[in-house]
Length: 407
Image 1 (tube, one colour):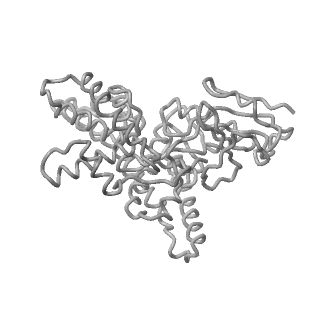
Image 2: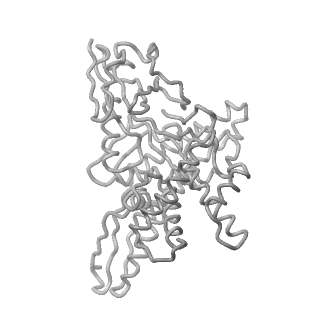
Image 3: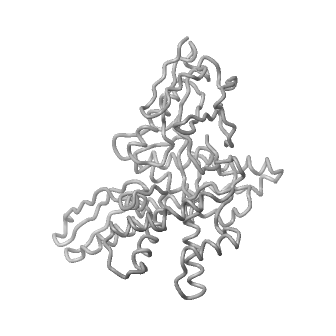
């Protein structure tokens, strides 16, 4: 039976792959062995001149849903892996596990939750991971997406400056609604998440030979609390007096500091008080700083990386040697040519360094720490030398040839 391939433009046609056989039996030359987390489906990685791709083998119906939801989330700017193609008709039975396949783009520099939970330094990263997980679920719900199977294994993690970024991987059970997600559906997603996370923590404890009582079974409850606090801040309405319009700016800045864009602001006259207005904010995705950086400099970075790099652009403009005022556009161009590109190339040449953008952010943080200690400005070159001499503090080293974890 001939398979039917639906492939998005700008990617390989994947016709060189033996779709009539299960991915378990593939012996193609561009097959890669990369780290991967726990998955209920068979997953394979393939290298092409266009990049690295992930093929997940599954039944036809969930494969179609996975592809459709991921495409919708990408269009909405939500944090999810990018669906590249859908392969159907690989067997006569659409209910057979290998009857279809989903092709997604590989997410560089990503890893699974187990690398944080069972590796060294989890204590320092715990709050970051939980905040990021809660933020991802809020972002998906703001995009009217009900996940239906939210758990630690269905998320990829990336270091994002001093914090952690999260990416949705598995959308087989997800649904995207035309209107806002109801409170009932959101709470249902949270309950599923709490149960799934508890099960994942129990599995980790068992694998480590620990007693079930030592497992962090309330981790999901902690995530749910963080979710509810974040949702309350982003979704609440507030009344202001006619001469308090400055509070609109304050509200928008608070939301931006959380990393979220604001798409619309509705000002509704309060029915019983003609001199008061009700602020209703429509919040977008967690891309406020990354969008600003991209527009200003053309540099692609994660949200918190972008926040740190934007500060560096302002720092560069303020301390430039000739002392002449520079507009934002000119400062951004000169910063990229004179500062960013040369340093990024120098960092990329280092051994065992997976993510140069993240390393650049760690250098920026190290520069701030040095300057605070000596009470004077410290040059970036001086900072890099000290950063290397001290073993690259803050930067997560990875094993050679292990670029990340993908599901």
